[in-house]
Each structure stands twice: as C-alpha cells, then as structure tokens.
Image (cartoon, rainbow, N blue to C red; front, side):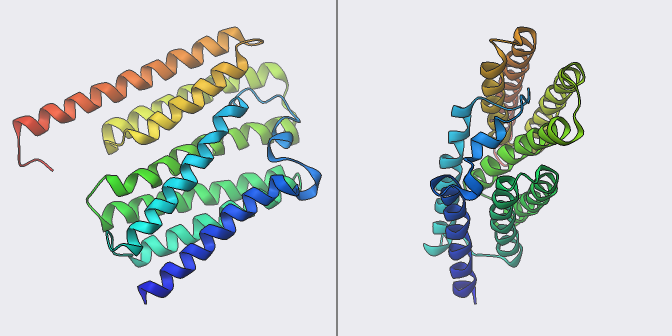
Length: 248
C-alpha cells in the first residue's frame, strides 16, 4: 500500500516540477513567471535572485521523498495527503498566475499554505528527527513569504491601492513577518523557517534600497533581529539540553 502511495507522490512531485519548469520554458500564456511579478511595483516582493531558493526547496523535497524509498521513514496517511495537496496547489498556482488571475492565485496559494501547515504537523507526528522536517520547513517558510507577497500584489494589481498606502502596509507586513518568525523560533523551536524569512527580507532590502531607502533599512534591521532571535533560541536550547541530558 505504501509503495503505491509513494509512486503517486513521485508522480505528483514530477508534475509539480515540470509545470514550474514549462511555465518559463514555453512560456505559459506568453509570460515568464517573474515577468508577471514585475508588471507592478510591489514593495514586499524580493529581488529576483532570491527566488533561486526554489531549486533548494525542490531538491530538499526530493531528498524527503527518497527517505521513504530507502526506509528511513514510514509514510503515514497524513504525510501522503499533505504532500499530494501541496503538489496540486503548487502546480495550480502556476497556471492561474500565468493567466493573470491574481485574485484566484491568492486563494490557491493560501490553500497551499494550509496544506503545508498540515504536512508540517504530520511530519512532526510521524518522525521525531528534525532532519526530516527541514525540507518541509524550507517550503513552509517560503510559502508564508510568498502568500504575503501575493496578497500585496493583489492589493496593488486588482484593488489599486496607491503608493503611500502600500508603503504603510509593507512596514506593517514586515513587522508581522518578524513577529511570526520570532514566534516560530521560540515556540516551535524551528530555526529553518525564520532563516528563510531572513533570506526573503534580504531580497526585499536589496530591491527597495535604490528607491525606498528607509524601508530597506527597516527591513534589514528586522532581518538582523530575526537572526539574533534565532541565535538566542539556539544557545538557550543547547544550554537546556546540557543541564538536562534527558530533555527531548
């Protein structure tokens, strides 16, 4: 039964990766994925090079799948369902995005976010090792950022908010992202997700530095706060484990 489910997941993974690749190779509807993003000046959008993280995410997810093939993990029904849904929503998002349906894309990426939260919880329940959680954390961290970016894009492209309101909203969203990152660090003890936030915020800093210097400075300061918070959490956890060798 698990072998059949695993084959389904490999097929879903390949369809997801192929859809993302073909979106730019063909390209779908005549647009590159990044071209659509560049149609509007969205302050929360990171610089283009930041999106190279997708290669890392897809590779990490492949390693995660291989861990089941090599019997390092046993595939639970929740893991199966969660990963299958993420592949479905990921590929669906590419299609609606390329047909300029940014409102629908926002709904789809929110569903992707929910499915990733479900998969994250399923992975934590299925295996105690944090090593196998890393690929899911990478993916979840990036999709949290991508959901916020999509929301900002929708407000600019479809709702038509002006630059001053977008400027204020971006400050608020950056602050909320930082608070979420700190909450994840200290509550979930997950360092990967906030470090993905830092990577994205570095891209937002880079993109906004020429024209929105104050926002760029604000962004990099918050990124530093996240790094410091992650280090504090790491050292605190190590100290706790040293004091209590039976702490898990």
